[in-house]
Image (cartoon, rainbow, N blue to C red; front, side, top):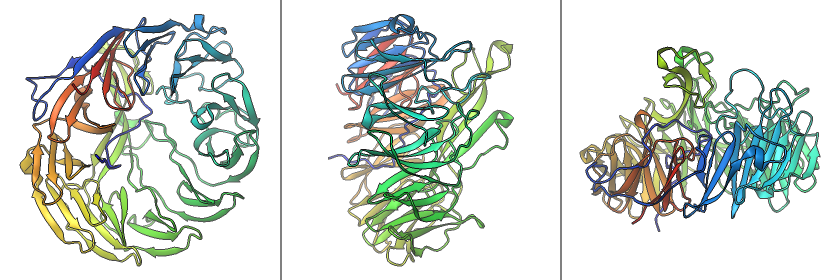
Length: 613
């Protein structure tokens, strides 16, 4: 059974990233893309009835493929045959037409196409179409101000993901729609109002559905679209009866829910553990599930920071994320990485899950910019000191014309192009004292700490709670967890695939994903199993079904490589130039949920590509 750790460099981004590579150009023999270059096979090539300038993607099974522009949609089946197509103004009875905002919800045997027609001189219109048939399921002109009006196009509504004022609740098959004075839950397939409450206002920053109780725990935030309309807005954590909208309790809290710069994901998390609700926001806040009363809390900062001051100053705006590990829960305790408020040092705390009582605090861990992962292995706690961080930024760039998302265009067409804010998301390494730190679970004292890694540190892989594997830029290590003894040290730079960026747990091997390819090491002795030839510019890794993929987005390209992890050979690759595609895989590309097929898009054209010949 192949295994893949959660350290994979996979982003579920709520933003369509720029990519300008050639559509359907299959990179095969003669390109030296891997240890042994193969070729993907094209299953079919087909065309939409319209140009896919807004959306172009498939459902998880590849049974439906949709392409849309502002005014129309076209859907193909798994064989590339047309299922339906049409103009929105003809498909909708309320003549929804210029839908600058739209997104899909995939369900079994179809799903929904949500359309929002913002009217500057009239009433905003919403319509929902059946993806399988193209028939209108419902429409409405009751819901207004879902997207901010006036001015330049803002960050909200440019990503073709959910609106911050419209949240799809998958477990209920319903849309939760925020309005000025209330929140309304409507059936996704009919638009019928299930309930409305005025005790909860704002957008849904995060929710957890409790199936046993048929209840929703959710946190609000002040959405941009409704910001100017709210009066008396307050931060709320609420428990709601999902059947009738009854608010069983609501709790107010301090703090501001920020959103990530590019993805616009609300920086907040919720967990239900037994009869308690754990909320991450400026620390850990714990509430009684039954009453909503706060039981305990630990305040601490995160260290996500802007690289440049001011709003989009100097042609670039950056922020850094994924620097602090998620809380590690056990049956009776929670482990938290703390950022000190005064000296900016970090340390780990263990708290009793029920009372919040501090059981122990580790020594201060100096020289660490980030501590992105902690692990429990028997009576030891392993801390990853250092590692990759996620950078989200907008860059002011001149393009050949047209507005392709971001924050809109600036200036004129001087020199044949326009300047616009272009989004980028990538992983980076910061200089710090990288190492593996092992703590005693009972006392929090340091059991051992590895030598400092000069270049960087990958995430960790644990084997049977006995052995830990880790790489730095140029070497690959294994340690005995109980004693800290270094079992081996292999010179990874001898593999000639560049500096290590991540590690993949694969049967009896550890595959080290590197800047220019892969190298695999046998767990038992560290001997190298294989090294691929160079694949330059690898920035993402995907494990989909039983298939493994690498991605290269250098120089505005978007190349997906299929890799045989048993030997490092390249099955094939596809380089795409086109809009649409899944935000997970980059513009112009989508992949089925089993990883067996890739879809590449450009305008009207669709190509279905088989991964395994």
